[in-house]
Length: 250
Length: 384
Ligand SMILES: Cc1cc2nc3c(=O)[nH]c(=O)nc-3n(C[C@H](O)[C@H](O)[C@H](O)COP(=O)(O)OP(=O)(O)OC[C@H]3O[C@@H](n4cnc5c(N)ncnc54)[C@H](O)[C@@H]3O)c2cc1C
Image (cartoon, rainbow over all chains, first blue to last red; front, side, top):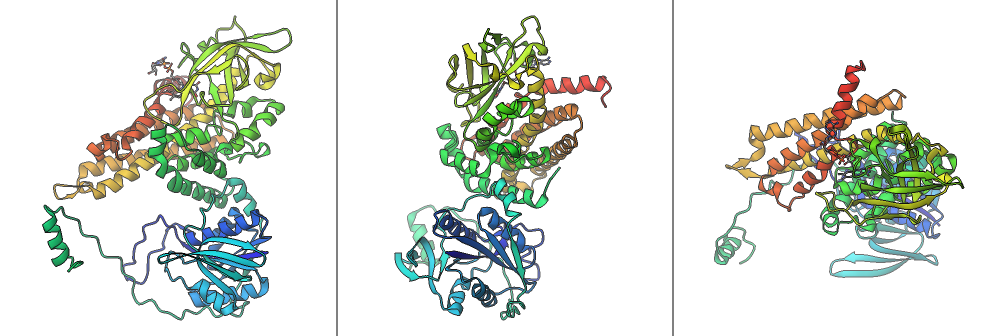
């Protein structure tokens, strides 16, 4: 069974991002980049399937500038067998990414495609679902448990109010939730081995995909500064403030 | 020397993630339980910390001195106990065997030390032989079958209560009172005549026990003698410590960086007289002095490591590194307690733990005084 894992290069989750003065986006200059945490969970799940003998090959794929090769190497160090970089300097947006990945899936015919449920930069949570629609594959999103057997995937999903278990027939798309697993750390011997694993590069044109953005970002604003709290003297005062100032109770 | 910058930055990323995700969240627990939890040890095995300095042919990563220093600076932005457990094997726990061991000794121990299956320790210090290590009195007497019988008492030995493999320094030549009468042995736990105490109560570094080693008619075969040669044990341990001093300097820099990070965050957050304490220039000065000294230490350590990687003699340099970095770390700890005020002295923010943990750096692996003496002596001998 072949597993394809699309991954995204994003700002490291531990970095406090700053909005650019012209509000055109966040400042990425000299900022530490990393594999999107949900994508890391996807890689970990794929590697575990391989270690369990369920999967035969794990392929990591990324779309973006040539520097995305760094994050693909990390995935190879975590246990992926090979990597594909679709190199573009365009601002890759979900629909174009999903189309490019669909073109890769056309070539690779993976049985399982595991996405992160969303990337922590724009939090769109769209790519996996768009990809499923484009390829006509079954989809199971927000997985917190995944079992693959007999050409089927059983997925426990985290939904409002509880857990839902569904079964999909392979080939299928799964998107990962936070609690699916805890990704491992790349050890130095594995980092060294990763250098020798194959990485292919394609251009969107090779794949017949137009990456031109279809959405325009008008303005990016930082969250409002949090006001300092106050200590109230009594429950009555608290109720009064909740009712008349915060207006959260009536 | 950095063999492959891209690989190195990937390793540093993995270490940083371990520190943020696993080490820091468990710091209070390590102190309360006086033990590094098994799952954290497992995560360090995954990272390969145990074998970073062990040559690749024996299952380690074979990092260069510069790479090892960078890795250690990154690994130690958390409680000291983690690196004692996870990385003593990548230092004094294995270094004597790496330096002067026979092929057989290397094959027997290094792969398991690199994998973290065995914990190694170095037993040099004795009640009457501290700074003056050549005064050690543990004796190893040759037996007719070629083996040795050891008798003696070691103390303050890091990880002695839980270690599996002991590098023990003992005198094989009674007439020679100096270093050339000393030999190094590698002895496994379970060897009859070798016992250890429980953990010796101490000021800090909870989770990283130290203890005593008792040798009472401890019989070892001839092949326990490191390198198969008598009388060179002190030179072996000095070679190992020469490298270890760069390591310890790096291990003193990581905690200083962490403490400064905490202090900067607190200076922005804590308000007095209606503004953040970081607005006051007297507080800024403490932050600035700490930053300058951390960067000075880092520059000295990395330059010394590169020199060692080029094969140059660094005996003078490592004393400077060890002295400066450990004293720097304690000065930073003291300023950071000051910046935290009462919160720095209480148990609630982990700052007083750092203060206690890093105090030991100025004592072991040569006290500050011994390193100053060494630097002075070498300067006067024309090594400048
Ligand atoms: C936490 C911890 C872990 C340790 N781990 C190990 C280990 O794993 N293996 C091991 O073998 N040892 C270990 N040690 C022992 C350590 O190396 C010794 O404590 C150290 O070398 C100092 O020896 P001492 O304690 O006997 O002090 P002493 O040598 O008695 O020194 C006492 C004081 O006198 C000063 N002094 C001594 N001689 C001179 C001089 N000539 N001129 C000026 N001042 C002098 C010293 O600087 C010091 O201030 C550890 C110690 C500690 C605290």
